Image (cartoon, helix red, strand yellow):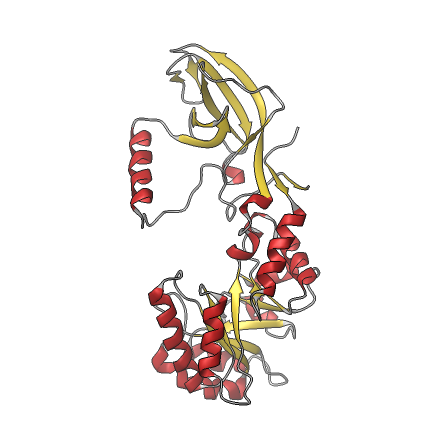
Amino acid sequence: MSGLKLTIDTAAWRAHQRALVDATPGIIPVAKGNGYGFGLERLAAEARSLGVTRLAVGLPHEVARVREHFDGDIVILQPWRPLDAKAVELVRDPRVITTVSRLEDIEVLGNVGADFRPRAVLEVLTSMRRHGLDPEDLAAAEAAAALLDVEGWTIHLPLHSEQTVAEARELSRKAVEAYRAPLWLSHIPSTTAQEISAELTAPGEDLPVRLRVGTALWLGARSAYRTTASVLDVHEVKRGDRIGYHQHRAPGDGWVVVLSGGTAHGIGMEAPTSGSTVRAKAISVATGALEAAGRALSPYTIDGRKRMFVEPPHMQSSMVLVPSSAQPPTVGDEVPVEVRMTTAAFDEVVEA
């Protein structure tokens, strides 16, 4: 009996990857965190098979997990800081490209060693206000180029909108005017990236625009993978029976179903939502009302419907209520479970 399981239709998954890579010149795949649920090592191997020359990871310590599975350059997305010992160590790795986002770090990074020039991309501050050089400070790139092997400008944009495209164009223009180097962008269509490249490239000049892509590459083909949980136990209950750690009373006749998957797998753990659409806001209100009444909808589907948690998920299992009007599963069955792939940890990954 397996626990929380991810099943991948590898032919469909890889067909989607190949189509996206072919449609995105200069794509830089992103593999970070939990590897979008698939694992960093697996994504690195997929990137190698796709023939790309660069792979981006989130943190310095993730480099070790991908370097044996990928032959090209490895970009660290988290900006370099002199107090991070691992980041300082990796500066000397000829395959590693460091991200620099502060003026004060340029000189420090450039003087880490006298016998080499660290490879780096310079990050431009966007309206996200996360990391980056202020657009007014981009002229510092000339000085940076004397100390570093500057491979380009990286511009991490908000999620795609008309404003995002306008911002991409404006910041790209300012960056290239300050120092002519390739542009590495995110969250805009490939066609827009190519338009920006054409607008900014002088005759006879090679000024590529590359796109960093993670979610759309690995999670874009939703039908190419599925997530399931195993039924560990089924217990019939009557209305009023005490159940769970907290001994709440069963709201009606039915079954308590114990399923694989708990907080250790990312079950029941979700990111805050902006509620940017009417539907999202309505769901948030409805969910909040259920939780205020001591009820919470689980991500497990049994007999065609998501079922209520008995109580918050445990570390490695969850308990849900199935009413007497539904057909209960049997021990050993697998049931669909909806997970957030960027926080999920699976017990088993199967290629179909």
